[in-house]
Length: 578
Image (cartoon, rainbow, N blue to C red):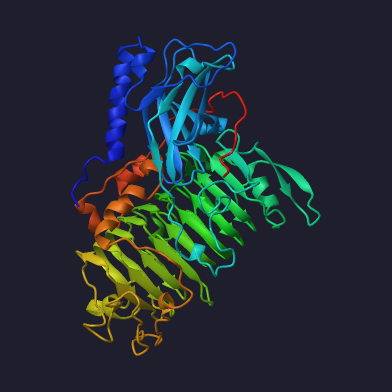
């Protein structure tokens, strides 16, 4: 792949910079000037002693995303703070709800606010400057109509027969905040000071906890099943957090109905990872994870209904083993079931996702719409489990895509494999042992892959059962609902495909056509608007598995541009509950 052209997000950023330059050169602004095609002045809020600022707010851009919306604006001279509101575009002005103060942030040259917990629909946002704790309502501006899309809630985490029935965590399945949910905001400055009440015994006793690690530790016994939403704002480094475990994890153990999410484009876990264990209905989304000391995201033991989506996962810290120069696992799933891993962006990961380790019992995981962006292997690497893999973009992978061992069954459909060396492998047969190799990735007995309607370009080798009924990589189905005959078995172990995808176990889903996968995945995988960290690979990177030194340098030198959190808002905010 040649150097990619500027994305729409990058074009928007350049446009914003140009607009900032224009604004800086002309400080005389009128109310009429600020009412552009995308903003409208409004005087619907009438307050006593209404204040006025020297120049009105100028909106730089406003965008809808997946169950969220955002707006960026220039500072209004004389304003001491901002109130930001949101409503459905069709609703009356009385339906405006004020955003929490923590959702408003200051950057070096602009302010930004994100509203989370929106169901799909059309919305508008309103920005009102404040002076000395009073709204300057004559200076308020309203965005253009913002279109918000729903997240795709598919996969085993949302299977009707699963234990919890959902993986939406602290949210409802329409994307709005669950009833009676607690919302906790963490930043680099308050992560050890934030407080929340946690039910800590069977009698319902509430204990006031201080610091995010204490809050999560107190929920470990599982007495508190109330929905909890933890919103991470900006970059938080490992040194900022008291109470990470010995391997650098923030631990979610024994938790029920929890969402851990980043706010906006730049929520970044720097130097630490997330461990989820013995948890039920947990969602992890919209985070950047950099230089983690062990796995970036680890689902390890006793989990059910876990949804990991829309994260940017970069290099980890180098480990002691030869295969850990890019860090250990990016998103590993072990002894966990009813899991969906979706819309994540893996940046040149060495080992994307181990799926099953010492597992002996069957488990269920879905991978869909992930961007395996020049990552090397384990996309995923499966033992034992029943795994559905669809609509992923395998983009320049130097070792292999999907690998199955120990009797695993994987249905691989409607993916796009672009220059992936070995798109599909079963241990000790087919492409895995081509050229006299003793095995590319495992000495374990093989598993079975059913392949259907994948787009494959530039593979070194891919052997279907129609071409070799014994030494094949995958059984090629001619229809989605075709069952794999039991006569097709792995060479090592004699394992057959379990045909889970044609059984009552299967959930509802609507796959994209493979020709649309690249566009859909590169648009929506990763954090909001693609995150604040941009990197484009080239054709030369497709075959490389070593560390990209320029990328590693950029990661090591990453620094958030966030200046401060909070808009000095006044008035009472209302959570986005439906």
